[in-house]
Image 1: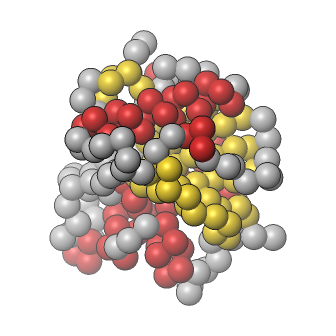
Image 2: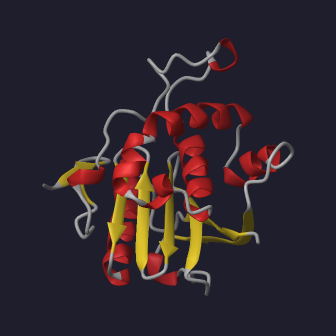
Length: 198
């Protein structure tokens, strides 16, 4: 099954997992029955969902890297995402606040702004994750051993067994977002890389 989005662009074409990890129309808090403190949260909560996924992924929680567990846990992830959105900002801001009360075990290792995915230099470890900020939308990417992962709060969790196919789909995502947001070729995407603190 082909997945189209962000202006009818083909997405996740090379993923080893496709429809088994697919979610749709859940990147918001409408109908989530959040408490009064988060009642003012409206619209997308992609930044919070992505931060929650990063924590699960790097702490080796099944819902971070196993598609069926991700789907089963998604409502809890959305709920946590609404709270993180209340903190404003991106993953480093969310994690700094969270680490005041409990440990996320995440350590920021690098920040990069590039348009071409081929220019990225991934951490040397075989276990890392990144918060990707693409013109008003956040996704998570990561590596666990020899598998690569892309988590888009609008579409789901996608697993890749081949690095080049992962990179091709990540570039397709970047170009789809750029087209949707009418960005020039000089506009870059921000990648914030994390590893797990021991």
